[in-house]
Length: 280
Image 1 (cartoon, rainbow, N blue to C red):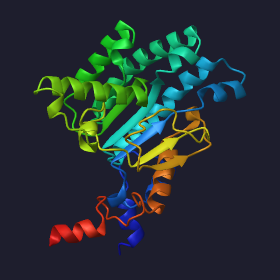
Image 2 (cartoon, rainbow, N blue to C red):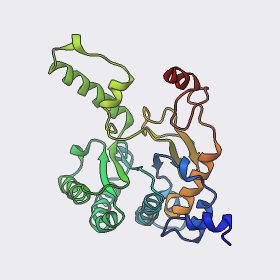
Image 3 (cartoon, rainbow, N blue to C red):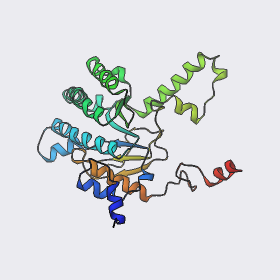
């Protein structure tokens, strides 16, 4: 006789380890976030606690990226965005560390494309990519093209990214579009217009943002898009973060009632009054 537990267990996606599968069994697959954004933080502290150079923390963080990306793809999260390198990093990090991060990024992209293809993951980027080293830009373009035909999860790496710069670029884009379509008299600025000119215009806004290392701040990351996202902060440092930790964040997300400013909403973000009006 098939028990309820057997039915739930049979629905656990292939490839999850024992810890991940145990957490997944308590999730509602119908209420998974459509888009998860992660602020990867704590590499330096991870290395310091082990009396290692900071770059050792960045190197160890690659395993966390791999585990998190593969788990998200296995449970069919449509979009995952990782905050990999901010505009501020150019100023706040030693030149030698920045140079190491650029080399690490190139090596990661070269090594991981086969795995991305195996998991049907499409790679995209946000940020001012034109300011990155030319060889890094070439490797990024190669990896994007190599995964362009994949139809599963969209993995977006935020590189040389700043939310404030994104908004500046969005307004510049709106002005350029207006100039090409009759001038400023034809410029209409509303939320939809701004969203269409953001780097993330091809993505839904994140439902869940995860921050590692216990810090309680957004660090200039997706400030427009995170307006109604649920925030999950874990004390786990990024190099120690794995797919199981991601599932724990999703479990916490599913315990919350998303109010979008105080009103009760259905699963798709519509208010009860809006639904009633549409039905009428």
